[in-house]
Image (tube, rainbow, N blue to C red; front, top):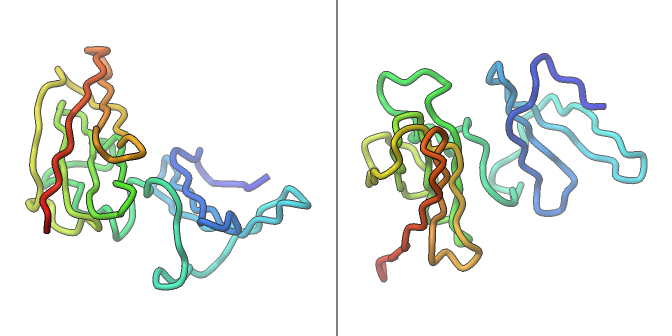
Length: 155
């Protein structure tokens, strides 16, 4: 087992599946080297070099690359989910206030985004389709699933 102080809430693997990073309920980001044959993970004390480590799938909702998703006045619980396009150019997020935000990726500045409203409250899930043509968002209390068309500029 990979022991954490608090329960993990998000995970992200490297493209080669040799490392995994986790985000826990107490906002700890931990890195683990994986031994698939032994079915074990070993805690890594250093942060992997972001220039040489290629992470797969969506980022954790905490880290240098998602810091701009957090809006002024928020605590750590207001951001619920984030997803990146396949070309890593855009990141979308869902929050406790029914807002879907679209940032350039990595998201560094909180103000540098487009905001979209439609959910009654709590956007608990966001995911781009594999071809990036649509963004799917899931509401909490409204139990709605929205499909947003993604129109990218030519730049």
